[in-house]
Image (cartoon, rainbow, N blue to C red):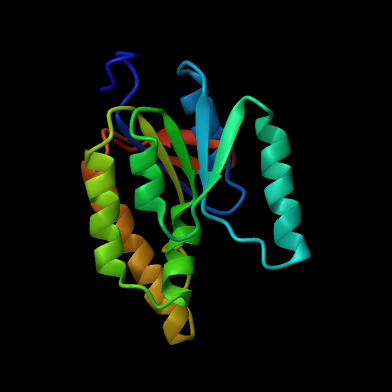
Length: 174
């Protein structure tokens, strides 16, 4: 648990499907801590629709949140902010960026775990649970789904709290 709040775990993993309320719940968790709040964004705006989604998220968060963009080097962003509470949104976009950039996923996962272990302030990680549907028809999608599931298992093992969101309702799993 974090030193600044007896109820705040050092690591929380918030999982859920698309538009399940996971980002909103993660923001609520972090907003219980003293400001300034830091939002580490992993999304990349390659088209107008994604730019609109990013703008919607920023507007909902409001000016109290400082945003740092880290589409590939998430571990470095976490280390730079090691003494500040952070919300990372989202791990599946980060993983997509790594796969499409042909990065070493195992090395990236180890670097992420190492950075999280070196932090002295709480981190709330958001990620899409993509393993609940049918088996994807192409190899890239299956690789992504499998990599996300493995990453989630690794982080859930480390996390003091794991939350699964469904229809805007958070369910504490751990």
